[in-house]
Image 1 (cartoon, rainbow, N blue to C red):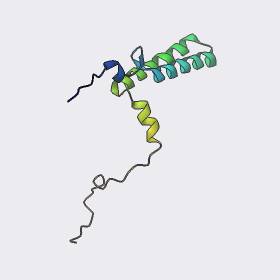
Image 2 (tube, helix red, strand yellow):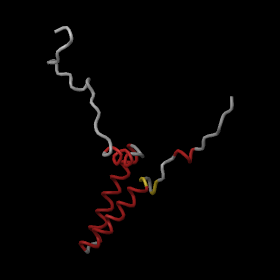
Image 3 (cartoon, rainbow, N blue to C red):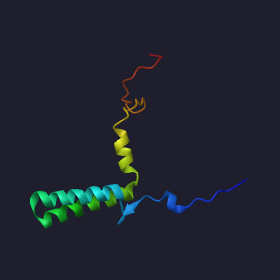
Image 4 (cartoon, helix red, strand yellow):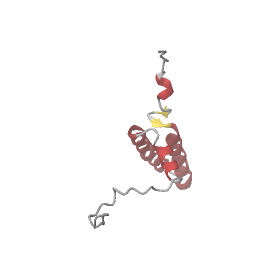
Length: 94
């Protein structure tokens, strides 16, 4: 049986300062947009900091959460018969 090496860097998510890179750049762009809209450095930094904290939490929770959320809109929910068990269902013997 042949074993193949698996490199850790292939399985690590791409992060910037501990946040997934797409979320980091969204936080940076929203911070810059807030700065341009309000003309206040404090509001831009506050927006960036709050979105960055959220991005770090989301990356720590699941690094692929953005891909999951974007793909979830494409698929319809599937029916799960065990999910709606209320006790009022009729069985074949009734």
